[in-house]
Length: 461
Image 1 (tube, helix red, strand yellow):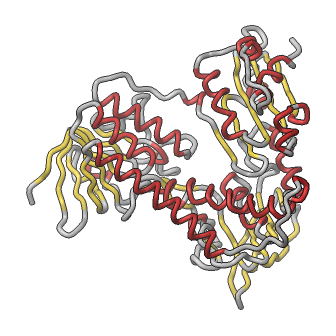
Image 2 (tube, helix red, strand yellow):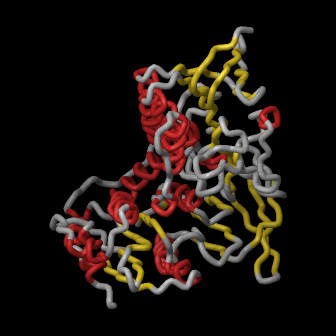
Image 3 (cartoon, helix red, strand yellow):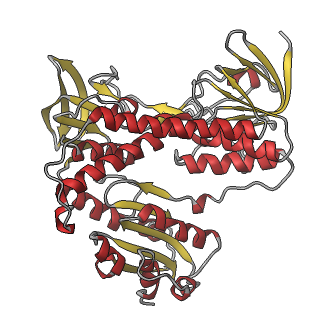
């Protein structure tokens, strides 16, 4: 079997992989991108970020039609939901975006190879298929992504006990949906089905939801979600789950007491694990972490083999599509002999609930833990003119800055449009901006973003 030679072979066609492949091609490297799924885009475009946001938007429109249109003088009669149409729209969105990724790679003359890739040496990749292919690469980027982690005693069956993948494809609205895990995936998917009519119970072993969130913002979100109809069972451990007669019975333990909860669907969202087991790492002399499965890399994203790089969900850090893209870009530039770096202090985190939550940088808890002298500025959306016009004044902007240098250390938003607004704060953190810079920047009026300026002005030093 003759081997095809490349400057770079990228294993994985998700946000990290296709971004790396395009950037490498732009920089003149002969590049191939290997993807085992029929469609490019990885988890994010196919069964993650994109389909979940499509369903969130559709369910939000339905919720608004039922609860808020009348206030705006819009009369539509009784709103109904067509699950088949809702799912068909989601699939169109996914198909269009994955097609765009293919066109992007083709435009940049990246060779797209479908099949399962496996390392067979430090510079060799074997791709399954009919026929199988052998690739020789001066450099390799591992971007294989991750998969949902199962919970001991609660195995996935794909129908009643499901991962986030199946929860994006229900053919009917569950009456009672149980969710194990109060992270952003569970809260977002819970929001979809709650709006469409399900009773939703979230079981979380920690005392808080979305544990990495700033405490003030997290408490606000918890209060709002409870008001929307979520039931939360915090500090509660799941012992087991079994399916019988179309019902999932979950044994939980809280405060020393054991209780049985019943659902007609159970969604398990307890994290994801890196997909390293099929990569043939041992053939290249790379050993993943035995406990986490992550591949450890240096600041340039190189593994223990200097010509093999790893990015995205395969390496430590938040499992976010935009983090993977940034790493893919940095790795490609390094391979091409140019400067490549990721500023991990300036990576935004977003929860697409209603209200949305978005943050970047340090939380108030983190600055306290590190002993950093700090000040905070908080501005509620109740005072924001655009939020008043929009009819959604829930939430606030919270800025955290160094008390002595005035440099912005963190920004945390809960409210409508938070996902879009956070970009200003990310840029501020990236450029080392101060609260004075934010307060002195002219913002359009009326806009949600004015809350940034007001939060900076609200700081008492």
